[in-house]
Structure formats: structure tokens, C-alpha cells
Length: 185
Image (cartoon, rainbow, N blue to C red):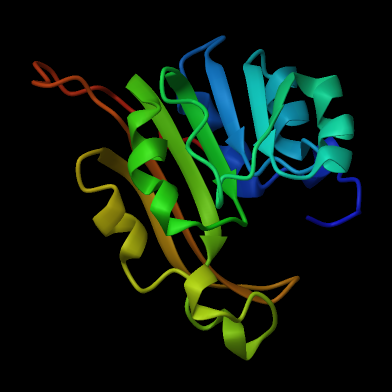
């Protein structure tokens, strides 16, 4: 994690655009939260946040925006096996082994907002390791059991990066009537 403290103005535009889909006053998991830039912004929107990160220094900042948990998710068991969240937010982080646990932590009616680096990023900077870059359509494949509301896979500038983004809802089964998910900007 970076030593740079992000302000709430640095919250991802993707997260800010789609957070309205998270059930009001829902509890939100911010995975790999760093200093808590998304926790801060989501807290201002009325959500209760739990930030998880392995960096204890970053979590010192994040704890002012909600609950925090220090966990090395790449070398330890998933610490939230009995928890479900109305929102799960992940940005700039990819550890494929977590996907089953991450999806299982999404409550029925819950919203996944995910944004991270994709193949092609190795041509413009870091990360460049293929293990940390999504393959074309990978988020769509991983979310095949969810209702996908929005998906992007392409290049973004300032800073230059290749990204993949998805917003998906864990709908109840069976769905009797379609829910009207607002596509507002």
C-alpha cells in the first residue's frame, strides 16, 4: 500500500457513481481499503463500513472512517466467513483466490463494486505482473451468478491505465419482478 493519505475527494468515480445501488444504511466491506478513502466517502453517504487491509499504518488512518480489520488475505484464511455485507467495494486490488469468499460475503440484495487493473496495463506502468491484471471479460465470468448492472473494460487516462470495472447485484432467487436499478450518473 502507498504511504500517501487519500482524501475523500480521491474516492473512485466508479464507486461514487454506483454506490447509490447499495441498500440505504447498509454495511459495506471495503477490501484492501488502504487509508480508507472509500470508507470516508461511503460513511458520508450513511453507510457503516468495515475496512480490511494488511497495512497497520494505513489502517490507523482508515479507522477514523469506520471499523477496521488487519488481515493478510493472501496468506491467511478469509476472516469474514460468517459475515454478509450489503455492499462490497474493491479497487486496485486483485487476489483471485479470494473470489469465492468475496462473493459469499455479499448479502442477498447486496451490491459488488469492483475496479482494478487489466491486461494491457503492463504497457503503461505498474502493476505489470499478469497475476495482478484481469484478463478480458474476467470480471464478467467471475460474476456470472450475479445480475450485472454495469461493466467496463478499457483504457483510462490521467493516470494512464487499463482497467476493468463491474457493478453487480446478488439478487434473490427466483426474482418475481424485475428490480429497477437506476443508471443515474
